[in-house]
Length: 353
Ligand code: NAP
Ligand code: ZN
Ligand code: ZN
Image 1 (cartoon, rainbow, N blue to C red):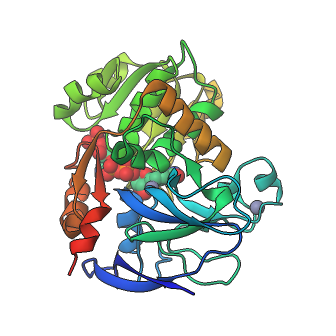
Image 2 (image 1 turned 180 degrees about the vertical axis):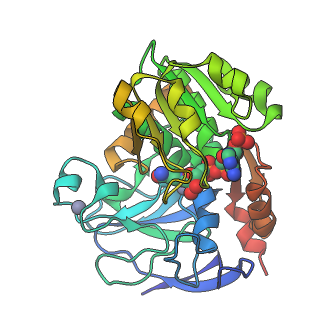
């Protein structure tokens, strides 16, 4: 028996999100039924809703930074019970047997991970719908445990912004003494500062916004570089082992290359598409520098990140909103007017008319 749930959905790239009812499946044997308590608002929600990536299906219920409480479990579920504090991120399933899945890289599943929304259920082929809803039903292997002590609303953005910055920090072996820079102080960027600092790195923020210095220092930056100021850029020449670039739009990557140390890597997590202006390979070849990309993180790695945040007391800096404020929140996100993540208090959905 399915459950009819309330949610907020987009019906086209240009329409506002509004109240939408749809049916969630009844739990399969391995499913966990989760009451959504909080859901973060990622810039990817805006990209998806507005069809920036050309693959949008409507109606679309966004939301992949989900924190909730287990309300029911299927017959075979062993890892969770009613009442548990849990999280769901950007994926709800993958093939589980390809080479990538075998390495715990479900996000790079060779047959495509099942995304939490605007994706397809691997078993019945139905469209997946995300966390801007009362309830979500997810197979237990893709449900995360939220450590005791973490504020639930502040933990929501860890499920995407947190893991998307944690994964490259771990992959490129950041630790004490590493020199790390983050480009852009938004949802991903502020988590990058906090996580890199907690790993022991010396941390720098590149920003185009002069007003963000004090916040950046409070969030963990040892240094702030205004990327529009050539003199400030020249001062950090040859400095960084790793740069995590979170800028959501096409932008010139070339000015950051001289700031990498020999052998350093700039990893793009924000923008998907051709670089313009083109990337000059000469600085890469001459100093074994690299430009790479990275997508969220695997499920075990996401649990590791949550546990790391539990140990270090790390959550996101958030502005809690009601679901009724979501359209205004998208407009503000596009103007970088948020410190530093909107999180929806899903209790407000009960009042939605
Ligand atoms: P956000 O909160 O809007 O932050 C983006 C930041 O980038 C802004 O705060 C701003 O920082 C800077 N910025 C914005 N527009 C810019 C422009 N035109 N030129 C230069 N800098 C600009 O976004 P977010 O939620 O952190 O997401 C960032 C991007 O990552 C999005 O494209 C999102 O879709 C993507 N994403 C990727 C993954 C992945 O797995 N790879 C996961 C989640 C999200 P300053 O004002 O400090 O410059
Ligand atoms: Zn996201
Ligand atoms: Zn796979």
